[in-house]
Each structure stands twice: as C-alpha cells, then as structure tokens.
Image 1: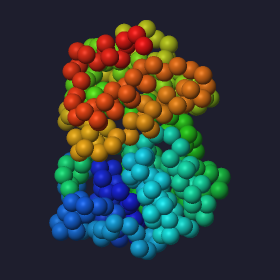
Image 2: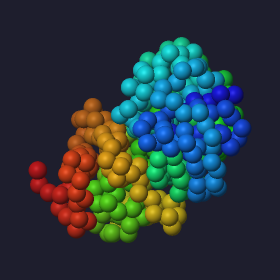
Image 3: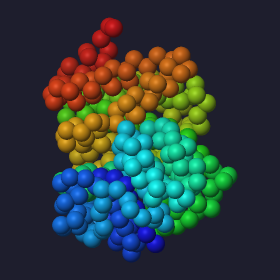
Length: 334
C-alpha cells in the first residue's frame, strides 16, 4: 500500500515515519532544507512512540496517485497544497489532518471524486529541525468522513490502514469532533503570545484565567451553532456544559487538568512552534474560527478576538508579550 503525506511537518512527519515503520510504502512532500534533510538522512521520529528513522521518498509535489493521501499541512496552506497535488488526489482516499473548522469539507468540495475524511491528531508533536520530529505526548488520531453515509467503507479502510501504525478511533460526528478539538486548541494562543510552554502558562493564575475565558467563549458559540460535542481528551458534552456555567475558580480546573495530561515535557503548542520557525501561524483558524462563528450568530467574542490580534502582533514584531501585561492587553477597555 502506498501512502502519500502532503506536508511532513510535526503531525505529518510523525504519521509518515510511523507508517514507514508499519511497512507501508511512504512518499512525503516537503520543501527547502526539510526536503534536503529527508532526502539525505531520512525522517527521524523520536519521543513517546519510540525512535525510528524512516527512509521515505520525498518530493515537492506528488507525481503518482497513492492508495491513500494524507493532507497534513497547516490550515492556511491546505487549499494551495490540494490544488498543487490535485491530479494525484482525484479518485483516491484523502485524509485531511488539520486543526480548525471546515478544512476537510473544503477539500471534499475540491475533490468530488474522492472519499474525503477529516482527521484530528490528539498527540502532541514537535518539529525539532529539518528531518526530525518528536512526540511529546502520545495520543490517538480521530477519523470521520465528511459524508458519513457515502464514505463509511472508506472510513473503515483508512482506519484499518492508519491503525496499523498509530492509535486510531472513528466518529460519525466529525463536526462535533472538530469543535471539541477547537476547545482543546485554545491552549495554543497564550504560549504563542508569551513564549512559554502550555504547562507554564497554566501555572500562572492570571494567564489561566484568560485561557479559561477564551475556552468558555468558544463553548458558548458552539452551543449557539447547535454543535453536539464529541467526547475527546476527557472533554465531552456534559463537562463542557458545566464548564461554561461554573464559577470561574471552578472552571479553571479544566485547563489545569488538560495541562497535566500533557505530562512533564514542555509542550509549546503548534502556534508557538510556527512563530519560532518564522512561519505564519494557524491562529485565524483556531481562536479566529471562534470569532468568525460568533459573528455568524451575533455573539461577541472579545477575548478570542484580542488573543488573535496579540498573536499577529508577535508574528509581525518578533517580540513576546510579558505575562504580566497579557491580562491588561486582553481585558482592556476597547
């Protein structure tokens, strides 16, 4: 079985190396120094799933149609990546492993001849350097079909293929799973703003309060959109309902618990990783998605809106915001 991974960064590189270890014929796409490092030395996976050096084929774009294609680029790069590789993706199974909302649905619209699935990576991975990725917190990948009725067989087929390499679960509630993951991804903005790990952010009371407020805004917006949260990472419908209504001091327990689940290895979050590499972040598809969905139903989301602006400020200036300033910047009168 040939598997193509478009975007061999932290998440895609992890899947590519794991699939190679499971005996799949793997081809990845990459550019620049990352491409040259993989071509020269292979793709090295370390960390929570053990060490493996994968000798995979690497290209800038795909030149043949695989049995399974995994799109694992950042949300803002997905449309371009799919367009560049469209001839190799038409008619094959396509798994879009991506944060945010609507990514898999946009790919399905662009590739009507393909069975398109959405994937949510619940493991934490880091891009260490060109050709090297690491698992900092192991976890499963959740799979769901964009068209659950039409593509049930494709979902089973892809779950079997990927499940031979990494832990996999499936869902028939892809939208609910995307929203639950969006709540989980609320941990990303403050590390990107301050330069601190997720665990360190949560240890600071005022930063923990900001994170809690942003998460509660997201839950309220999801409720207004009629979302039924899919259970994930200890989160689910009942817990998130209580979280959105509880006194702040009790609600803060949730981000503390999420940080504990990450273990002792500092987790920078994907947004801070992008900033450290000088790359555009996914913030418009994370906290920014909450803002956009809130506007669609007439709900203000001032905390998420301000966090998006602060991440963009760090992107443009290269300077992190001191933790003591963050609450004033977020909650200041506008």
